[in-house]
Length: 338
Image (cartoon, rainbow, N blue to C red; front, side):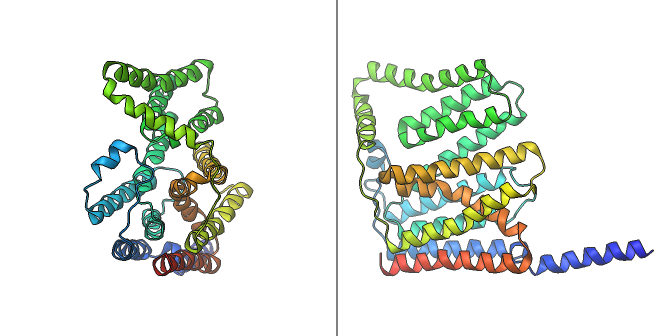
C-alpha cells in the first residue's frame, strides 16, 4: 500500500513539474506557429525585395514576372513542408509536438531579415535526402538503397550544386551501422554517375540545353572566389541564437545516454555532424554562408526539441525564453535596420 502511494505521489509530482515546463505546454506549438505566421506576414509587408540568388537561370525566368507576395507565399509553403518532413523523422525517443512550429518560427525570423528568399526552396532538398538516408535502417538491400539515394542527390545537385557538400556525409551513416560494404560503396558511385550521364546525353541530343552546362561552370568558378564575410546586426544575432542552443544540445547529447536505441543515436550523430560541416563550410565559402545557415535550421529545430525537453523545468523555461527573445529581436532589428 505504501509503495502504491509512493508511486502515485511520484507520478503526480512529475505531472505537476511537466505542466510547469514551457516545452511540455499544451499551447506551445500553437503559440509558436501563430507567431511564425505573424512574422512571415511582417516580412512580406516591410521587406518586399526578393533577390533570387541561389536559383538556376531557368528557374529565375519562371519567377521573373511572379508577384513578390506570391513568391513569398510559395516559400512559406516550402518551409511548412520542410517542417512537416523534419518533424516526422523518428530521431528522438520522445516525440515533441512543437518541433514543427519551432522550425516555422526560426525560418520566419530568417525570412524576414535576409534579402534572399530563394534559399528556402532549397532547404527542402537536404531534408528529403536525410529521410531517404534513414530508410536504409529498415532496408534489406542496402546496395539498391544507396544507389537510389546517391542518384537522387546527384540529380538535385545538377540544379543546386551546393548540395554536393552532403555527398561524402551520406557514406558516413551506413558506415556507422556497418553496412558500407565495397559493393554498396561502388553502387553509391554509380548512383552519382547516372544523372551525369543522362545530363550529358541530353545536352548532346539537344544542344539548346548547353546553357545549363554554363550554369554549372559559373557555380564551380565561384568556389575559387573568397568574398569577405559580412554579417548584418540581425544576421549576427541569429548566429548567436543558433549557437546558444546548438552547442549545449550537442554537449548534452554526447555526455549523456538519453537516447538509448542504437539507430536513433546514430541518426542524431549524423544530424550533428552534418550541422557542423555546414557551419564550417559557410565560413570557408562565404558566398554560401546564408544558404548553409538556412540549411542548418531543420537540425536546429531538432536540437531545440532535444535539449529544451531534457533540461530541468526552471532552467528549460529560462533557456527557451532566452532563445525566443534572441530570434524575435533579430526579426525586429532586421525589419527596422534592414
